[in-house]
Length: 432
Image (cartoon, rainbow, N blue to C red; front, side, top):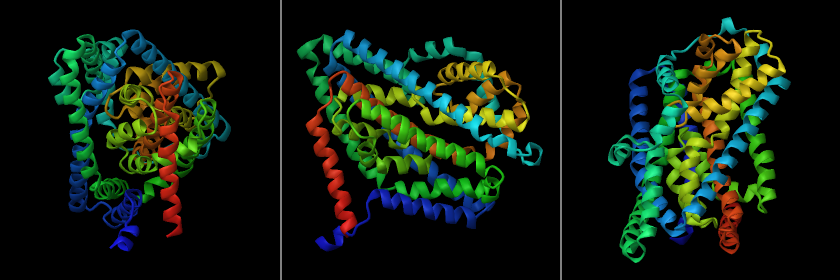
């Protein structure tokens, strides 16, 4: 019996198999409406299962974490550090994407008029709403008028805002609040247990989500834009290994240790193109990685809205790709303006469905690119979305360690033991 268990596939490998099967079914059932409907529904059910878990975990973990932090000055310091760090990393990501696009010129090799356009009406409607709301509307929207309505709508930032104040309130009443902390800790433990159960369905969900994407789009849609997709992926990989690697080195740890610990979550985020799919496990793992619960519970949910490094890379490359395809030569001044506009717009669109594409809609007009140009890259958006989601997940895990270490709330011994357990597991797998 023990020998049989030793050969049981890990969740990561199960997800990889699900991904491969999804590609197979996507090719086999290309434009097959019945199969597309089945896969779409199965994929939606899996994402709904994850969304069912996310907010209870965020509320319970964040409230307890803030209550244990207890000090509003400390919270303000952590919040300021977090926002500054997010802004710096996002700006570097945008700049890197623009440099790569300027050096490799992906758009000059494309005849834009030979490409087939895709429907972007859903993004157009979202962009108009988001632009009408603006940055002030976004800031006002962070404050919930009805927390239960925000929970029902799945609005992350209002829930975070309420949880922070609720946690501070619990800390302020001292011993009387202990019963609430105990209750919320129990809720968190229950939801983590439920998360482990739901993760057993991940390979099926991944298979369905990949399958429906390819069945609708077809492999043929990738061929004309293959160079653009390849450049985006290479740039994202370089950002993780070089830029994030340097940041990790500065703060005294290895990016490869972090990647080893969260490899299953990276694969799942990549396969589903959903950051929410891994949020519960990320909170659990980064706590075990050594960062204090208060930092983890605050940084990760906030990062899901404001620290989207993968999305920033994609937006900058895509904007210059379209400019090059339309033979629009941008001066250094125009490109700096584009960088600033992308920085501001990406924060103003935070939390908007399809945010990366919506940001592009709101941005490309500033450099003279017709909005219709986006219809030509809409078809491959899902494929690139997989990569940028994985980068976003790595970026948020890195942020928790950086902020934790800067606040001296990082347990080095706990981290070493946790990393060692993964290395030992990898050695055992390779030996088998």
